[in-house]
Length: 244
Ligand code: ADP
Ligand code: MG
Image (cartoon, rainbow, N blue to C red):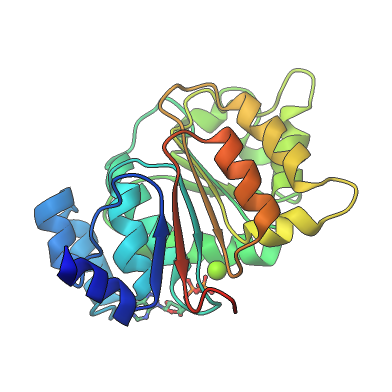
C-alpha cells in the first residue's frame, strides 16, 4: 500500500473512488493481472511504446476492470492509447451484432486521429472500425449494414444526427463502451451542449453492460458533477499537479 502511494506520488497520479487498483509500471503486468492479450502487447511494442505513461498506468487497469472512468491528463500524455488498449482487448474479436463501442471526439480531425491510432493498435485482431463523417454517410451506416462493424469513431453531432433520422440510421443497442475524448471541450459548445448530446447518445446505448469513459486534458467541475451523478462506481484519475 505504501508502495502504491509512492508510485502515484512519483507519477503525479491522483485518484478518487472506491477500490482503485494499483497503477502498473509495465504493459506486461496488464497481461498477468488483467489478461491483456499477446497481440496487444505486440502491437504496443511495434508502435515502440516501451512503458506506460502515467495516465496509462492508472486508467488501463480501471478500464480493464470495466469501470466507469473520468480521467484528465495533459495534452500529449498518451490518453488515446490509454482508452484504446482496454477497449480493443475487451472486444477481442469481430462479432456481427453491430457496434459494441463508440468513441466520440469534438471535431472530425480529432476523431480521424483516434481512428488512425485505433487501426494501428487493432492490427491482426480483425476488428472492424468505422470512421463516420458527413461525407461517407450513405455507404455503411444505414439499415443493417452497420452490423459488420465493431467500433464507431465519430463526433457527437454526427452520431446524434444519425440517431434522429426516421427510421434511425444507427443502432447503438449493443454498445458496451462509450468513450468521450476531450470531454471538457464538448462541455463548452454552445447550442448543442455536451449534456444534451451525451444524454441523447446514452439513451440509445441501452445495453446494461455499457461503460462510459470520459477523457480530457483538464479536469472540469461541471463534467465531474455530471459524471458523479450519472455513473455508478465511478473512478476518477487526475494526472499532474491538482491545481494546474
Ligand atoms: P493526448 O491524447 O493525451 O494528448 P496522445 O494520445 O495523442 O496524447 O499521445 C501523444 C503521443 O504519445 C502520440 O504520438 C502517441 O503515439 C504517443 N504515445 C502514447 N503512449 C505512449 C507510450 N506509452 N510511450 C511512448 N509514446 C506514447
Ligand atoms: Mg487526445
